[in-house]
Image (tube, rainbow, N blue to C red):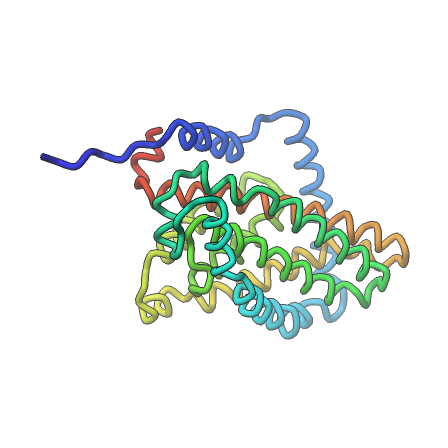
Length: 283
């Protein structure tokens, strides 16, 4: 007798509808506002490129620090503490595989509150370093990336993915880079293939294969692009006092978007891992 094909629970089916709605927002006033924000952000990024020495800074300082930050931040995600959270909620979880066997409803009940925590943390950090004006941009950028990599790492771990794996760190970095590029058609076209490649790489265990995929080089490229994009958005901080408001507000905005993106993408990957791409795509 053949084994029955696994099916989505009612909660998981509804969650997929919500994820699909997030992926395809309606062309309402919010979309128009996002387009205007994208134009302004792109203008700031172009301005950043014209600042003497900014490319050198991105290449030789920011990129290296972001790479280091990625290593340090993901190591700070306490996997055992995540497992304990599940056990405290009544689930027998001692490994990533144990999480994968749960219903998404159980995962969501434990994940609740992460977005609020990290958005508040990023806002406080941005306000503090924003007071320093131009001198505060680089340390603020590094702190902001650290906070958001930690947030992505927690979402990944709660959804059963091992964030200590280098391919998962690339996936998290690509996610931050994606959020740093305001919505436009080009981004929608280029992001999906990149995420599929990272998702496939996340299932490969051979380090030799991972090196052949060029994950290290890809991480460096993502770090440079992210550093330049965030630096452009931070240029308003060169005005003392006003910079504190801009820094705190932007950090909260960016982190909120990162958390929303991580929440949807990792939950989607959780369902794909559990049921397969065909089951999820046909739901």
